[in-house]
Length: 100
Image (cartoon, rainbow, N blue to C red; front, side):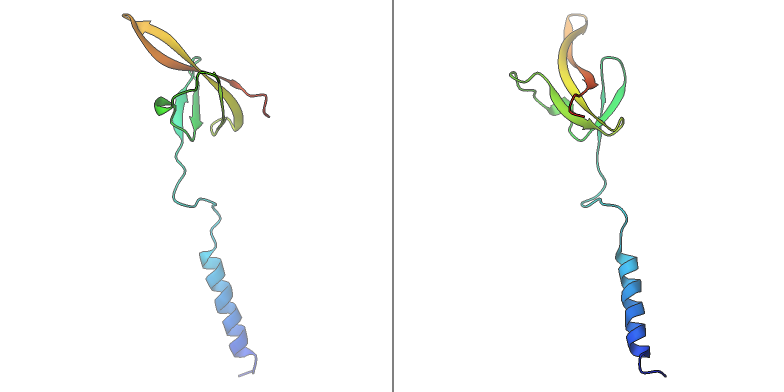
């Protein structure tokens, strides 16, 4: 047995430990959750925020968010439209942002 054998075994054990605990994904705290949003032209967008529960400020009529489905920044504008029978609901107009 060579005098460097214990050192070599310790280095190999450290390398194996590092490789087993090394993760390729940068997700901390579980998987990412994206909320779907269907715009006025019936395209599906995916955002981190749930717009069904969000209140848009009156002074700023648009909100810029990153779309995970299209991989680009998009401007979201809420539109209050009639759906029939005298009922109204919020729909969302989405356009590509100038932020890119």
